[in-house]
Amino acid sequence: MKKHNFSAGPCILPQEVLKKASEAVINFNNLDLSLIEISHRSADFVAVMEHAKDLVLELLDLKDKGYSALFLQGGASLEFLMVPYNLLPEGGKAGYLDTGTWSSKAIKEAKLLGDIEVIASSKDANYNYIPKNYAIPSDLAYVHCTSNNTIFGTQIKNFPKTDTLLVCDMSSDIFSRKLDFSQFDLIYAGAQKNMGPAGTTLVVVKDEILGKTGRKIPSMLDYQVHIAKDSMFNTPAVFPVYVSMLTLEWLKSLGGIEAIEKINEEKANILYQEIDTNPLFQGVAKKEDRSNMNVTFILTDESKKEKFDSTWKAAGISGINGHRSVGGYRASIYNAMPLESVQVLVNIMKAL
Ligand SMILES: *Cc1c(COP(=O)(O)O)cnc(C)c1O
Image (cartoon, rainbow, N blue to C red; front, side):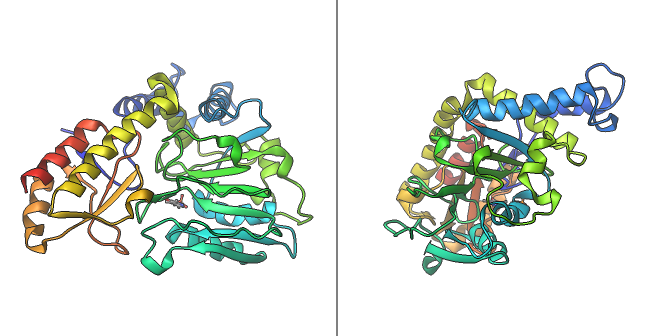
């Protein structure tokens, strides 16, 4: 039997997607060739890339609104550098919200290219909350935030309001909840948290914001180069793009983001309900800032640890150990995680 996969990343993917993907590795589109051995310039693969980009804009409701979707490489980690390269003028300043490990890594890279102001930080409490009521300086080229803090289990509910550009790392909650995505000028997400396998990064960018910094940008780091070449400036990660396309088709067939958001809320609610009512458990993140994707919690009675760990392992649960910087447990309940798996975990917590 397949395990209940609560891994924070790479993530669980829908079973039907894995089946279709495995078939395409052997024989893609009845070509009697594998998806991963045909030219990325063949009509069959170009159609995959175009359909994947189209689905992204459709699901985010950003079609015909001046945005391009790109499938790049280098992970969200390379976007930490590409964003300032493309948006921060020489001598310019950008503002960052420091809400966790990934935010601070984004800040570190951006500092290589300019003046970075940390607008607000929750480092003082090991990132267990989202800062609020901070002032945003008026002289910024852009504001950068991280919508969901994968390691600490917090999620931004109210995004910064700013007249300047708004950039968001949505690696671990993209396509999970309904937002007005047009409030963002640039969104990026490593595929492997909520969209597909590792190896490709989604970037959704408003075309008109690019080409304005006066910087010389290396081709591979230049969004305009990738847009002009339809994400084929170099050989794209054909398999991760294909699996992402299948996952987005799956999401669309379920009813899109609105439908999955309801299911995600239901999953998170039953788990948080148990954490809040069972005296043996305690949530890590501040209630109002809790993530519906990564649920972090601890045991209040360490003497129960052995029993709890052996019970969930025996029930086929995998991947709920917390990140080393937080400890305890982290149940990642991304889009493809079935409600039934969450129920298995909750039942074990109840019976402890
Ligand atoms: C995992 C993660 C990253 C890093 O992604 P890579 O693709 O491994 O570079 C960045 N930001 C967030 C929010 C993440 O969860």
